[in-house]
Length: 87
Image (cartoon, helix red, strand yellow):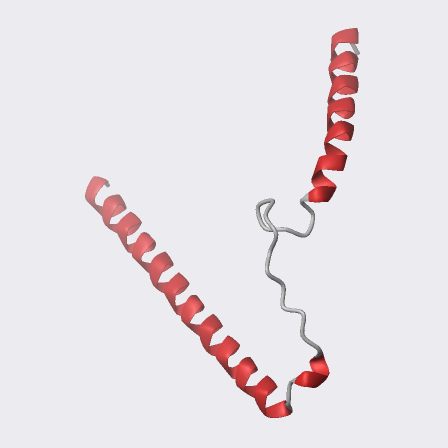
């Protein structure tokens, strides 16, 4: 191993160590800004409200999956059309 490689590794380790304190400040935030967290007690919600929330989240996730499927399908069709056109 040459000394240049070792020296660059040492400087890289020092630089990464200097960044650790900065990373801890951003640990639980979104892009460095304070996020609005829901701080409610679980005993405040009734079973009906929890079921309603669960159903709403399932519906939102289903819509997201449908949009992702349509986007992937569209990209695949475009790639297939380009592939057929040029080959």
